Image (cartoon, rainbow, N blue to C red; front, side, top):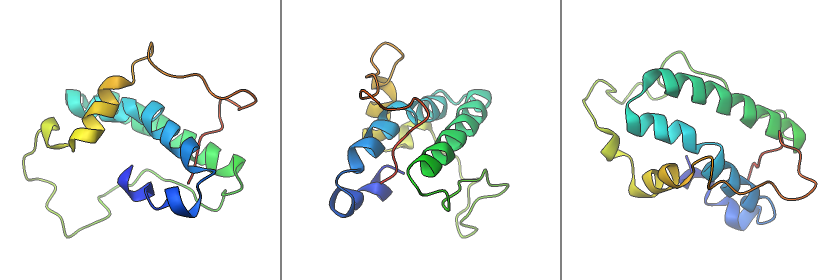
Length: 120
């Protein structure tokens, strides 16, 4: 997901740092649950991050972008039954997930509402 937002570094340079902060801080629990193979934690964190995404989209004027929890994989051309391990997640995502503990998270910038997360 983080890689998909890389073009925003160029197209929306003022918003990209907010996106990066969101990914490193708010999406990290989703990555941690994946790494831990904890399905219950994944469901909880994924549902929470969807709400945060939509709140941010609305706050930044992108309410027309609404993330929904899918009932099935988007890409029916991929066999999601092939066994995989948490280690199969790209290294940059593992590092971000492991770095973002409750004690290492940076506070939001001054004047930034807690519900206001980035979209690039």
